[in-house]
Amino acid sequence: MNFTLRQLSYFVAAAEAGSIFHAADKLHVSQSALSAALTELERTLNTQLFVRRKARGVTLTASGVRALEQAKLVLRDANELSVTCSSTELAGPVMLGCYAPLASIVLPRLLQGFGDLHPRVRLDFVECDQDVLQSKLRTGALDVGVAYEWSLTAGLDRIVLYEAHPYVLLSEDHRLASAPTVDLADLVDEPLVLPSTPVSQEHTLSVFHDRGLSVTKGHTTTSFELTRALVGRGMGYAVSVQRSHNDRSHEGLSVVVKELSPPARPVRVVMIWPSRVRLAHRVRELIEYATALEWGAGGLPPEPAGR
Image (cartoon, rainbow, N blue to C red; front, side, top):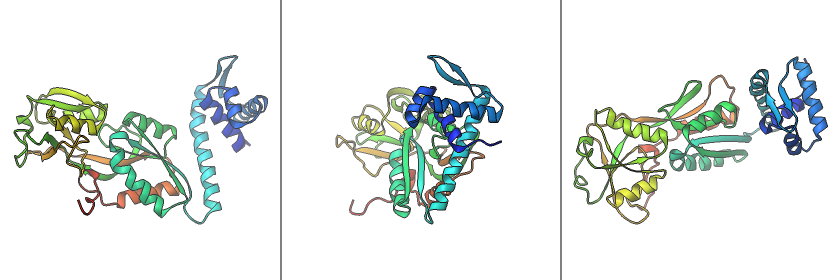
């Protein structure tokens, strides 16, 4: 069996583009050359990879779907071999995905710290919902991700970065703002500002359900800062695991953090990657770097001096 890396790269490009024309244009080769390479690859593998339809592009067969995942792995390994042999220091790309609500806490430290240690590693990132993150990891679009362990599906290996403990966020003039701790039962009749992302909202509601409590739903937001702004104006309270050194909203209104009593179950923030995938050395180094960092409460580093 003698197929080439070029044939595999043509195959992957055509599968992702869904069209011989668009794949050839992207690769800067003729349509006839690309089509001939695909036909030869199918002959070598003794299977049909595509269903070709005029004016409708190409569609993967069942064999093609299985072959696509393997082809990507072969091309990734070949690229890794090339990078390893051409340099004595860590180099090459790493694509990091991050569940969007965690990005502002986790990504800056990883991008700057790991980048300073390994300047020849090109660390790029994508912020996305947790279901999109898992899908991109499985298709090979991402090398590694950062997510809440809450609601992760099977087929992903993981390692814990830190635990995030739920707390209550109140306005400074709330009746419980001066209490040492807060019981959720004392808040259920007030409007709860909820995150709109499914994973975060599900986890927030679970904090109440674990206590057998129902909630009075208020506004939903996609932004942690908008949540803080609404709370600062007294338009509700929030339960979150995200934390900030800043005790004011963007409008300058004070918000107050109160720990829960009784405390709620923490949620773990983890790095994840596809099971049974050989990670590049630079990806393994990133994981080791991230797990060696000292993550404070809610993932925050120590508060900057002078504040």
